Image 1 (cartoon, rainbow, N blue to C red):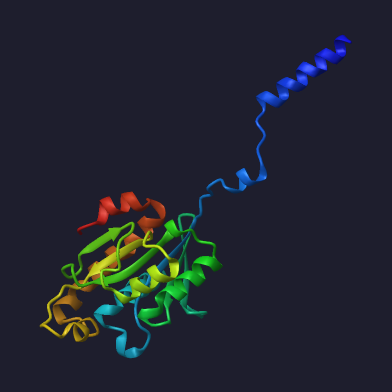
Image 2 (cartoon, rainbow, N blue to C red; image 1 turned 90 degrees about the vertical axis):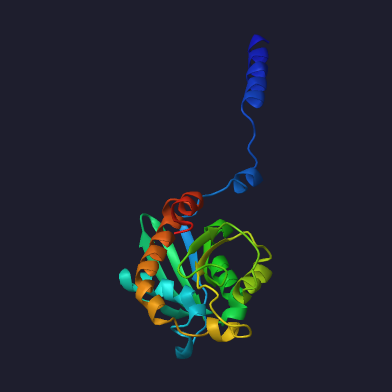
Length: 220
């Protein structure tokens, strides 16, 4: 009888003091990913290589050359894999043309199981003076067709974008010619330093985090 009462109390203590953890609770725990998708926006084709609108491609090309990386032609784009401080950066140049960039972003985000907070999209910005950097955790498309399509396909604006200023030094009605035009000589002379800075921003995003990266680089 005494043994039975002892077992009863022991069972009661185990049930109350050790909370049950259901399988779905385990699955909902947030995991930390060391994979990052860095998307440079641009248009494919030799005629676009040195245009202002292709700064996203140019940034990734600069980093790839600096780190001796090779881009491989893959589904919906060109991809290079960069490993740095325990992180893996997938550098993606969509081949869908600017207006359909979201399709490539969504495909590689899903394929590599990369969370939304680990995506960085590099784009040109007419509202910033040449070479000015602005990193934001979310925002509207600002009239940029690449961002507009990404917002549509991902069904959210809550992903990090890295805006590279190209200024707005064009006459009325000449915006398209300006963004699809080549850099002028003064801009070309300053680009290497700006591209070097952009490479550091990418690495910082993956290692130091978004907040620290914004604090360090915004406005530079």
